[in-house]
Every structure is written in C-alpha cells, then in structure tokens.
Image (cartoon, rainbow, N blue to C red; front, side, top):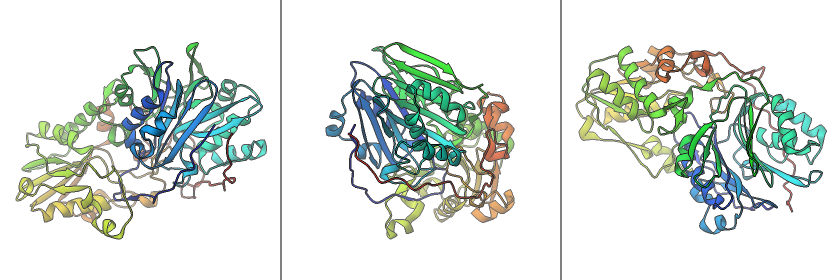
Length: 489
C-alpha cells in the first residue's frame, strides 16, 4: 500500500457563514471498468459535500493503494495519478472537517494494514460520531500502532484493524458500538462494504452499472454521473458487502429512521433523490408553502444562489409576483471557500455574488434563501442589494430558525455561533437590516417532503436529538494527538 507525500497548499478561508457540508463518499466494485475514473467522476458530483480534501483507495485484488491530498477533486487528481490507480474495486471521499483539523493526515480514506489478517482496511466516512472518547480509549488499549490522525473516522479504522476476526466480522461487532451519524464506505483487497447508522441520518444509495458492477454513493446524483441505475438505499442499521459473490446484507441494529431534514434544505444537490422525491421538487414546494405562510407586497422575487432560486421560483408561482434573477454567482469561486489573502478577505461575499443592478433598482424585493446561521453573510447580501438600488428587501427563509447545534456532521457546533439562539425573529431582522423577515415553519418544511415528521432528525430546529450527544454541548470536540506518520509497505 502506498500513500502520497503531498505538498500542503495554503488552507482555504471561509467567505460566508453558510452551513458547511459534512463529507461525500463513493464506492465501486466493477471488474473490467476503469474504477479510478469512475471514483473521480463520482467524487466530482459530490464536490459540494466537502471541499477541503479528496482521496481514493483502489485495489486490484492483491494490494490497496491510497491517494489523497488537500484540495478540490480536480486539483488532487490528474490523468497521470489516476492512471497509476489500477484496480477493479475502490472507495473515494471528499472532506469537510467536522472532527479534526484540515491537514493531509486527516484527509480520507483512512488506512490500516492488518498483518494478523494478511490484508488491510480503508475507510471513508460521512457524518460525525458522538462517543469518540470512549472509542479512542479502546483503540489505545487495543494497540495496533495507536491513532494516526485526529478524526473519528481514523478511530473506527483502527478498531476494525485491531479486530481478530475477518473485516466482515469486525464490522458486525463494531458498528453497533458506534454512536452518532455515519455512512461508511469500507474496503479491503477484495470487497467493498457500506454501512449506515441505525437512524440513517446521512443518505447512502446503491446503484448498478450496465456492466454488472455496483456503486455506492452519498447521493444519487453521483450514481447518475457514472451511468449507474439506482437500486435502493442502504437501510439504517445495515451493512452491505459487494464482491464476486454479489451483494450481501446484514442488519446490525434495529432501524429507527431519522434522515437529516437539512439535506433537503441545503446539503444535497437539487438533482439528487431522497425518499422518492428530487430535492428540486421539495425545494420548490418549500417556496410555495413559504408564500402561503408569509406573503408580502413586492415587485420581484429573487433567490440567493445556489439553493435559493428554486424555492424563489416556487414562491413566485404561488404568490403571483414575478420571478427574476437578482444575484449572479461567480461560478469559479468554490461553494464556500477562497484563498486567504487580506484583499480577498475584505471583499468577502462580493467575490461570490454580484447584484444585477438593472433588474433590482427601484424594486421591492422578496429575497429567498435556505437558512441563516450566524447572520453575517445575510447582512452583507441585504446591504449589497440596497446599495444596488432595491427600495425594500423582504427576506424569506425556507427553513425554521436554527437554534441548536448539530453533532451529526454539519459545522454548527455550538449555540453561541447561532444568531437565532438568543435573538427573536424581529431582532434578527433588525440585525441583518431587512424590511421584514419570515421563516418557513417546521410543519410546512416537513410537509414539503411528503414524509412524516418523526422520520427526520430536526434537532437543529427543535432541539430534539435522536441520538445521544456529548454531555456538555459547548465543550471542545475530543482531539487525540496523532502518532508520527509512518510509511506503509
């Protein structure tokens, strides 16, 4: 097994305070296919879920090779290094850090050689565990070289590697001990595995290639890009194995489905399918329901890219107020990142969005966005629209106020970060400088999905956590100093 000793470029700087995605995972078992390229395209489709690092592990049946680095998918992988990743099975990962800092060591897939099994294990993780301290203690006691990074994902990899049984036996024994949210893709030299926590907080789908191969991905849009036909989702509490024997499945815990409802609001791509509906359909319905709940006289409805325009179109359709473009996104700026220079930092949100002055000058605007987290970005957008000549700015949000932190994979770690924790809607409106502010109610948000309220995790909106959380919500996340990097043979 080999890993790249890559150069660490300057880390990106956030230019807005939108909720950062967790991660994207992708797995393939496809003899006869160019698996490295399939993984590349799959990760490219999942780039929105993580923009700090990317990596993949590929096996030819006898050796696992891992290649990963800091950066976007297209920056990390080239034709040259993809050509060197030869094999018929593999997994891939795009990362945004929720546990552990943004360093090369924390990029995924994580890896361990397993001498006592004469194999190895690589793992990609979407989500966040809540019992990392307990699990890390077990790793230290269990030996196997200790931890090599500061991520909960590496802890799980170490536990799987130190297990005396087969990887399949290790998965079925260790998965029930994990708490929190996890959608895993895991592999050894011959088999790709996928696993999902009993609540199914993060999505994970299975697809079939025309060649007979199998694909697993965080979102169905990644299946589409490689030409895989959606088969089904990995069920909550399920482990799936894919190899020469086909697809096999085991239930390791009683399923209690609690899909993160924020996947519809912001995280997932609009062309992905969740619970039988495209995210695009649901977001348009959110806009319609928002118009029913909080109408206001105006001349034009606009949306804040990327998620706002679809809901804005629904709002316009329901309200009868014309829809138009008012904010143009710079497509060559990452979804949430820029390089950290003082000049760019001062330009802030203007690097990402620019108003169409001729479209909004002299107009009363309804501006539709998905959420307000800290409020600073929204405040800048309102100011920008006023400077461009808008006479009124009425902000409409397609989700309820975010008042509670997320422990399951979204970067909203403490209540102190959330503007809605202590401020009323009226006070938030005054802070951001809008003429009016209204949020979509939680019942309406649920109704837009066509599912029952109890089938979702809604904790960031109502504070009801479906999985146990750390005792002290505001304490720092557990971080263990990693062991010195070591070369893998």
